[in-house]
Image 1: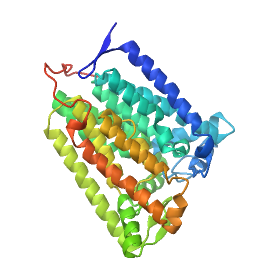
Image 2: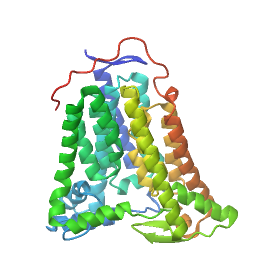
Image 3: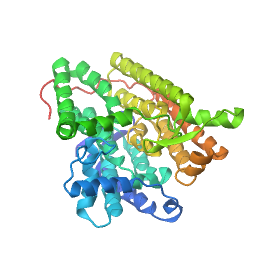
Image 4: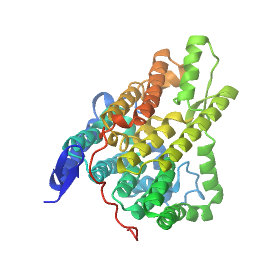
Length: 420
């Protein structure tokens, strides 16, 4: 029987890996069902009404960005329209579509583990996290579409880890078309291909990536250029959202030092109003971009290994989420497939961030948004600080699954040439 061999845990059979992945998928579905009951089912804050409006419009023949103006990228449209086409209960159909994306996320996480030559302990720990994390974050996952781009993102990472660079480039393009955040992985993966396979291979992968993006955006840009431009502009021009790190510090200063802050709704969120909020938002974006640039350069100039690629992919995603001017609860879904691949300390830290998020969202969100409740302010700030701590944890290679460099020859890289 062919084995999946681990550098840090002994051989693990393919059959064992498949059985464990299937079991994790079943447990994930159990977690999903549990989110519909008990205290999880109260005080929901849902986006499905917005998705349903978009889906029903498309089902009636309207063209996105021309006939109506969605705030999301074109790659999100399929998951909005499918529930409108397949059932009478949109929210229920959408929920099960997201459950399917969650199962795909679990299985693609298993594929990434196989490409990393993970042993039984690592398989069990990471897939256990992949199966149970919805219970830590709570019901927000039921009514947001972020499992779709998150599954595509881990699928792209798994493909690159397995040497399927062209496939990974196409999947990454689809992920960016679904939600913009995976673009932070593109410089890392471009450097990965260029240094391992050469400039021609990197250019080919870049062409595939851009072709997928063009296929997603250009038809809508041709039919409704104003709508596409408005959608992208709205996302880029969002103000300082109250759950972000910068906003949480301002609200904390409001409590301890009497700083004047005010909430103003807009862009589908609650934000810090005024010049101070604008200035902190600009500063947060500058820090976010600077940290990402440093990560891209450090990775491109360092050792090439699959473990290092995974670690820097997690770092880039966490930096984008933790340091930005917008930090909605569902953004943590983007982190859950990749961060646990790095090591137990990283998995424990992201788990703490998930639990802290659920401690106030959705149950006490409006106490924070409307009243700046002191207790909830502390919980929001604690969650944001934990995400910064996660950056530090991920920056320390000794805290990963492979604590020391293993002896012996490296895994042979397949020769350059066409890849599917």
